[in-house]
Picture 1 (cartoon, rainbow, N blue to C red):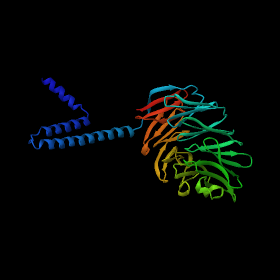
Picture 2 (cartoon, rainbow, N blue to C red):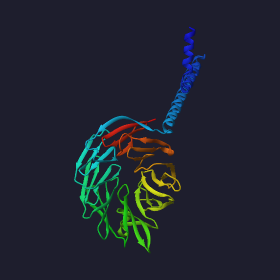
Picture 3 (cartoon, rainbow, N blue to C red):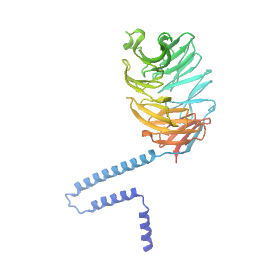
Picture 4 (tube, one colour):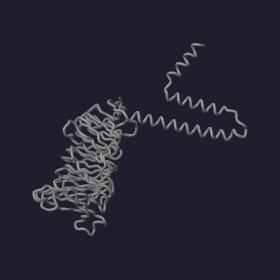
Length: 416
């Protein structure tokens, strides 16, 4: 009998502190139920007791959930555990990009849309020597850089295709499937816009002696407003021009449909994009500018970048930059929000050739190496995958990701 009591006491001492608290609360609630009450008071007191139990139980569950979330989020994982593998035919000779609810696999011979288990949803063959892909939501455009082919796809497959008269330099696609393309010949550049079916919507011509040389274009989500970044030389000075064209009602009365432009001295504005219908941005060699408005855009914020910009990436909420540190080794990962305010700044070491934003996570990778930063700059992962990474992105579940390599798709979980 004595031995049984000692054993029972030992079990209680080894109990988790959280379980102790829960047990204590339950005992107190039971005591309250056992208190003698008058017959008239019992129904009302039972209701109050039940209500208190519900509130306390909800509070305990919430506290436990917060504790588990913080435990998972505020630590750095260095290993992975493979949950499942999905072989893909021709994986080694293909490139990949996250698209809609799966991935696009593309090569010189064709493009296919795969789900998260590597199953083909559709497959479209073609012959393209140098395929380049741009993805925007559920629309994707493929072009032959230096060639003449442009194809537009959505989740259902091919929407349209066209052949250009001049070599393709760069393409951008809107969420609606409208494509802007920069074409080059020996004396001038042409900017063309096509609808998803391949019909020509608009054409702009430029030259270094005129408007300038177009370095990049971007389209608003509805495809009506076109942003173009031009480079030109004036008075022996390198300058840039950010111009907006509207092909809807706002641009009908404007010359060349141009609704706004602004010049920047001693700056090469090389990358532009729309974050939403009303917010767009342009990034130069030492400058970040944010514009508001689609049919009437104006510069709202101009931020000087005092470090060398290695790479730029973005989504609908943030603008990310990898900046080279001065006077010390390594790099700075910096995120700006849509108002031009710094949302994250973290230093890291190592070189990564790829950087992307997935929600509030920043994923850096190169070869097998991978580093993931979460909300608030917490380094969520710092380690290596099983094989060379071709694409990676998070999926539903705790610390779960899809990693694509030369063998196919792997579903993995981050572990200590």
